[in-house]
Image (cartoon, rainbow, N blue to C red):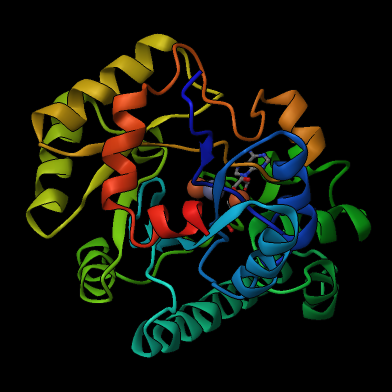
Length: 291
Ligand code: AMP
Ligand code: FE
Ligand code: FE
Ligand code: ZN
């Protein structure tokens, strides 16, 4: 176990997590995590609250966000960590991303209505506290009787190959990376498997992103086996990129079901050297740990 325990990928009620930003930080404190980043989908909304909780509970909290890139046949999620304070121009742009998510959710409701479901916009809006994700649409589908569970809702209606699906990303990944770099942040490709590319195509894709400023690959996730992890390490090495680690925590039930213990990397774990390399590049990380 590395001496500094970090978790750079976590969700709260600002997007599709089940715990408030404060509760996420409390949980991290209980598990002796030294540094976290809140990385809600397409919003920085929960960061201030998480940082206030971090000061109270002795956890360093970096501003973060998981941005959805345009990617028709899967998901391209980019994790960004920003300097503190967050540059105003970047913060303003994230408000556009928040509106994109709302537009996309409305498009999904319209599709589902055309498919004959009695789902209203209010049902979906009421399922989320802030940024709407498919898990909220799934909950609304369960509530209105169109699905028996979240899983059933994804399988029948809103999974990537289902009739009610609308992709979340409206911005080209290269533009996202350029904006993060311009803001002084760094960016990591989250769960590369969701790109659904074979190894050669993944290499070519990562090369294109690295050319415009991608900094890292999310190689460590508790829900990944050692072989996948090793492959992502090698991928990062080939392109001169760092590796990042995170639980992708959403809620306690999913944490148990999908083995995503907060703050702990999967086997064989991120090394001290990897953590040190990361801390040197993450804006404000050393100061946050010292403070
Ligand atoms: P979105 O970013 O709005 O497209 O929603 C993506 C989120 O939906 C992910 O963070 C997952 O937590 C969740 N998700 C994706 N596929 C499934 C599935 N098949 N069953 C349950 N949840 C899923
Ligand atoms: Fe999510
Ligand atoms: Fe993701
Ligand atoms: Zn995530």
